[in-house]
Image (cartoon, rainbow, N blue to C red; front, top):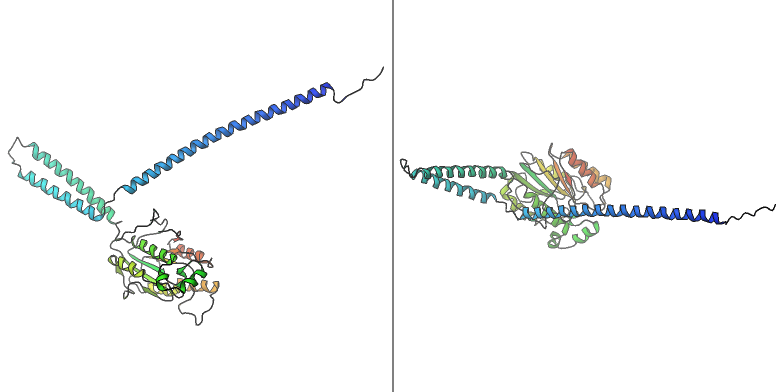
Length: 357
């Protein structure tokens, strides 16, 4: 009997292959549809979440616009309202006194007047309390910046004896040494308009608006030496009424020479009583100690660190130092040193953005 030949490509084998291929295609189609459904569902959820966030943003903008549009009465306006209420109360009391006591027909009128007087007195009490509460936060000066960047988050404000210590060395003219050299060759009027220095002056202008009525202050500038911006007031505390003059005098200062932080801190020891809050505006580690170097040499990072440590020893005891650092290219160690100083004195440390205030 002849053996039957075997063919691997028989009809049965092709059926099996076709079935397997069909099953694979069906499996892929099912997976693809599931993936598409999940993607559509996720897309719908993301769109819903995005819509919710957009609504929150619109609500926040609406609230912000409403708050900005709401008038905030000044202390003078509040005082005028109080005086107006007092006059109304006096008029009401005069009308009550003028009513005949034995008139039954007009008995309701005095009672109504007395109720009006009581209502006005309650309103006067609330307004007086509100003025007293906001009086502690009232400011001697105001500052209007560009846009909404009229704030400084994290800075510790307040104090009864406040010192604003401003670095007025040559490096405050620019953020790079190349541009500093360029500005040093320019006239004084051009130096005062240097963007970095103008930002520092604007920051001082803003800080003075945070000084509370009744507090005393000083604004010192320093390079190789330190002195008050108001001539003849070194070592003396100034009343808040001199804030405007201090800012005007600061605008006349021309950054120049090196930086002696030791002499700046030593000058603060002459103030009696000692300050209870210090704002330091600078851009880097000092370039000299108490004495200027005998010759012009390049100051190495280790020397600048040594000058900084010498300066810290001159600082009055137990006074918080709040540092506003305007970083200088080529001085990467400054941020760490001044941050540690702020932490050690229970102050604060900030590097303002270039568009503040």
